[in-house]
Image (cartoon, rainbow over the protein chains, first blue to last red):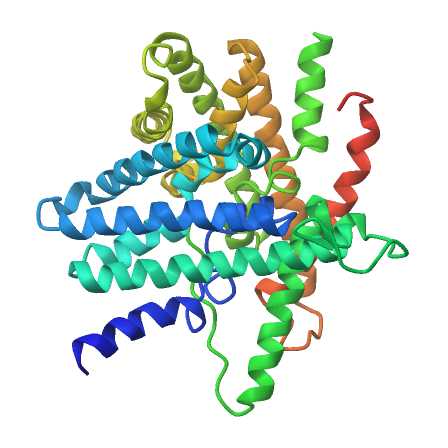
Length: 215
Length: 192
């Protein structure tokens, strides 16, 4: 496999095949907590993308300097630094969104997706593949958050990006923008994906989802 | 006293960390397969949360006013290392307690419920006493959610469930129904 195609593989695996939310079910706390509207989902997705991308670059470039015994601590310090940057940037330029997302921006630090990618990929690979992997995972996460936010906003407020979809007669399902709606929306989306996969490859053995990580 | 009681009940029922803030979901889904493991995980959570409340208060009072931008890094590192020290102390002093809670401690030290607790309680400006009560409430709330979830999941094992629904999808839907029933507590306090 040439260098270029392998980069492409690293990038695209995060979007569908190993999508962090729908397949690996990582980093669920922000996924459910902030997706009560599409725009919040996108903001959170972009912030996570930024942190994941920058941390992967730094971890991958420093991987020979970070001793194995303290690598997790080093990763956390790197991640926390970028989260602080993202937190203050949002607070300065988009105070409204920052207020809506609240403490969940700060909680990106403990998103197991980010720490997981550093440990599983960036620490073991060169800069190029690490960037491709981080971008793919980041985009996959962003897409998932957007999808979930859009579904919940359409059902819960009858609008998308604040523009009414169904017209004034639609009775919004308030429950969808409240906490239980997050569990239901993700539950039914996962259900739909596993059903879809079953229909497409009926004979292929269903792969069990990976073990839950902490976070 | 009334205020402390209010903080406690609201953290346990109304603003349950797991079911309405979505914090600490990974252990919530990860270890809720069996009732006794879930209970021990919950107790370990209460324990770490109480330590967190003390750390957060000390840091907030004496350190962070000089360097607010170090808040996240400070919280994580101080909480994680304090828990490690306490873990060593427990291992020495009470091997039984360590056996019951020990394996969970490293798992939850940097979990989002713990960091979330530290952030929320400093954002709300709680003092040491209020912070401890809030931590206790949050911990009890997490334990309650874990134990109920584990109870339901033990029951689902004997049911005939379509294969496509099994696993995470089913757990999420159960959690949704649980979260919906906890929403009923929202009217408990008029200002809540």
